[in-house]
View (cartoon, rainbow, N blue to C red):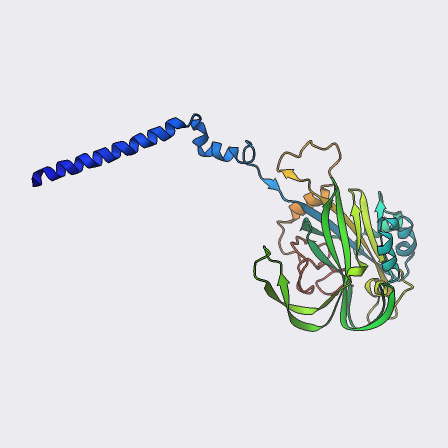
Amino acid sequence: MCSKRPNWLAAGLSASALVAACALIGLAGCNSNKDQLRPQDLFGRIGGGQQGQIIEPKKCAIEVAILDRPFKDEALNAAAWKAVDEQSVAPEARRALEVNGLRIGRITGELPPAIDAIRNAPPPHKVEPATFLLDDGDQTLISVAENAEQITLLLNREGHPYGKDYQSASGFFRVTATHHGTDRVSLRFTPELHHGPPRRSFQAIANGGSYAPQEFRIADGQEEETLQDLSATVDLGPDQVVVVGCFPEQERSLGGFFFTRSEAHSDVRRQKLILIRASRNHVGTLGEKVGQSDRPQPGGLLGRLAGRAGKAGNPAGAAGATAIAKSGGGDATKDAAVIRAGGGSGPAR
């Protein structure tokens, strides 16, 4: 009896193997299109029957040049603004800016000759722009006013004028870039004042869902006063430039603080003007956009950024720096996306 046990065991295993083989053959026979079981065909069917494609993310590039000239310079105050369309800013926003000494507008086509001559002056006075590559809807900081130990500003917000003292104050524009239409970029400018001693704060982090627990991050830096009611939006095409400046006669205004200054140990005053160009990519799959448009690509800016991205050791604060920035949040003194006028890594000159 014991000698028969191995035979029964072998017979049982053979029967089980036969049943499993029949089941596999039956499953395969029920599929009329066996090619679909191949991995390459399975991935090809994902996305509507097309082969797998890489979708290019939305990107915006901005090029920022800051002109620094003598106070009330003719080119910065007459030649530039004669060519600027200040109606490109909404009337309510334009009035709010004007009563605070700020001006924003748009130039279409070539720059005025006087501005172009300053913009392309030979060394050592040549203006080297800083460039930023941002995700659609992302933002960066542009440093305009260097740190002032103490300043009193006359502000006018929502029709209420008042004066306010600031300690260790610096001026910035927070610029948010988004795709607009088929080939334009929308830039939103919001002035900010960073002031007071550095301190530790807890900032909320955007959560992925409604029921996710609120998270915070620790940030060390000055107090940031964002003047949302003085925000202005300008949309740009490939041949347009945003101009940001001030009314120099309003010396105690926000614009006067942002764009005018006195040289150290001197009565000589200086004035600034900001020129900003913007470019964007075109949404779609990589490699399919060539030949889609009969318009010349405004892509010189994006192309130059791609070529410069591999260059290391070029700080954002240096003259001619190229900054590849993901975000402009956090302390401006530590933000890689902050640009400053003039050379070196110190404050704006």
